[in-house]
Image (cartoon, rainbow, N blue to C red; front, top):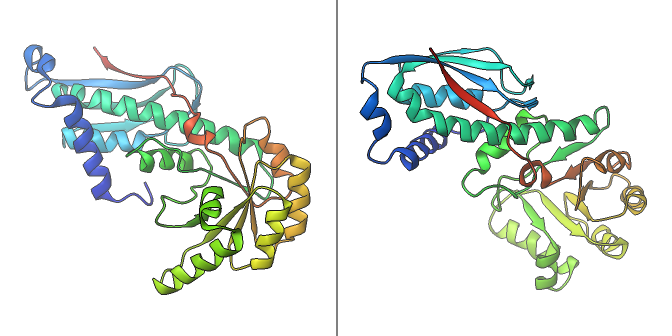
Amino acid sequence: MEGISNDVLNQFIIDGLHEDIQDGDHTSLACIPAESRSRARLLVKDDGVIAGVELAERVFKHVDPTATIDVRIKDGSDVQYGDEAFFVECNSQALLKAERLILNTMQRMSGIATMSSRFALEVEGLDVKILDTRKTTPLLRFLEKWAVRIGGCTNYRDGLYDWIMIKDNHIDACGSITKAIETTQAYLKANNKNLGITVEVRNLVELYEVLDAGNVTRIMLDNFEVQLLAEAVQIVDKRFETEASGGITLQTVGRIARTGVDFISSGALTHSAGCLDLSLKVIK
């Protein structure tokens, strides 16, 4: 949960429960005694990497401070069909209030963690970091980026506010790469901000323009063929960090990593990840 404030997490739990419960879980209120307590297990019904166990603990404690959770499999662990991630004992009505919020978030987070783990495995042993992007579900970015970390990959920027990324649209709107870099440096100085700067290039001509302009942190080589990417990395020659982006898949990431690029960013970590099938079952 590193990097996530308690206030953000608590507000997410409150809002998530309210979306589902509104003025009451009338099914549970109608048929389950208020004092009833139940024990349940989180059953894994797919192969992958589990994520969101720590979040589930927080949700259960929110709905019932007396809840006890016996964690059998921790976040980031490989799981397979039939595994039992945890057991929980708490008030029955509270358990059923929390069930869907926990399953929805854990299934999504586990899907992302699984995808991230597969990307990380493809570049194991190579000196490269796999980065996520801003291609996340609105208002759930903090959870999805948490899942990326659980899966073994690295977060890029959290948003537009914590890193400068000069992409093709910025360059075209500004007029040129050189002008975009110069005006960015002036803006940062005027506003007393110290932010990293990535500049996207689409070909070697633009790459040489960035090298002439300087004053950046990283050069993003967008949609370069592998052979051209390797050439570009050699041209940069460690003067700046290098990043490959654009259409990165599990099938191509290994070849791209072996070009010597420092970073590989892929929206697929989040936007192409599915869900890991999980269920919460009351034990009679």
